[in-house]
Length: 178
Image (cartoon, rainbow, N blue to C red):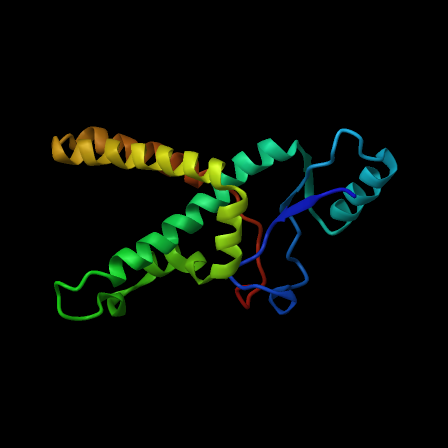
């Protein structure tokens, strides 16, 4: 047995959400046990390379911490943001109706399976809680810049994030948006 986690997909679940290029240019993380059979590892690694994935091998603990940061935390933030905005009632209307590109793009993953994400939170609780604390710390930094009217430092913080984000390369997806 060689555990594999393709880091691919959309907010849609199930086999019907698959598409031919789903794994091309995506990372697939293998987390073999120390006693894993080398032949089995080679076969699994070859399979993922054959479908176009970049294979990375790491231990399960590192996998859980990495995924808590780059996958689990964004989902939790998206769910929280949608619930925060939907819960604002001081305007006397559902303000989500004014959602445009930014809100919809940012919260797309809040359409993911709630059952699956509940289970992920149960299984990776410690790493996710650590990431939530780190994120809260970053929000407090931004809050401090704004409260102190330190607009240039705020801009520098945004600029640093923009540079990191601009450096991310996403694989092309099919025209149907899948």
